[in-house]
Image 1: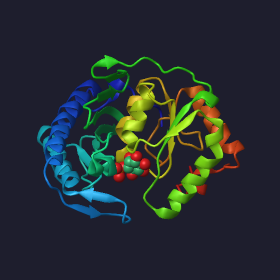
Image 2: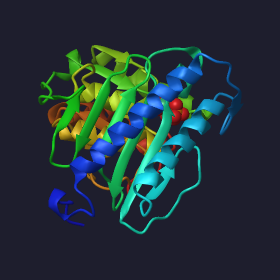
Image 3: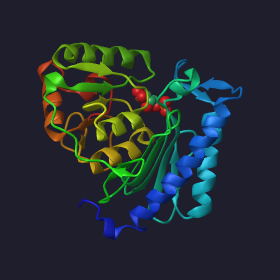
Length: 286
Ligand code: IPD
């Protein structure tokens, strides 16, 4: 499929980004207010995969706001069923990315909202809730942090690179992810586990970490952050390579300066991890 052109979308991507920012800002304020009160906690895929009543209430708020403004658009949100629209635009939403951090009162946790067309993000907003950092991007329009355009990131050599990653909720997957990490940790500057994939991608975009990789993500974890990283000039790809920042066809991602992405991928392979995605149980590329 040819890459999407900003002039050939069902709606101007800058307008979609403004709506994403507006709704994400209201949702972030809602989460901050609800954090101060008691909230119930439930679990999803495993005993450590938490969902709070604030996640579900925020999911509802975001769906209501988007549907009121754009009733013909589709919705794919972490805490609710998929809604098929007719406009060609599907909003992909994580009401609280980093729920574990939210529950523990830790930074970062974020509202993540992306407008997608043909599974490709075209407009995005990520708002970190604890500190209020606001990232946005639209296709062909660059990426911004608090309204200031992000400059392209530097080409850090791999031995000096600060690497971010994350772990899934399934215990066996986590063990395999830790085994992969053990193989590479001696060859990079250091490793960070921030706890919110959307914010990991924004951190790559603004140079607060050098490169990020993770397996086993949902589309709502990835959609907004990967547009922000790619509009900031980063390479955003599948770990096994070859797909680029195209459709959301996988659950694994590697993002950073294009050279660093290549170098980290080569390190993963040199470490005996030829088929990283399969080793950690993610779906291999088609
Ligand atoms: C999680 C976070 C975390 C990542 C997990 C995700 P959630 O999302 O993004 O950083 O390592 O893989 O599931 O569950 O907090 O929305």
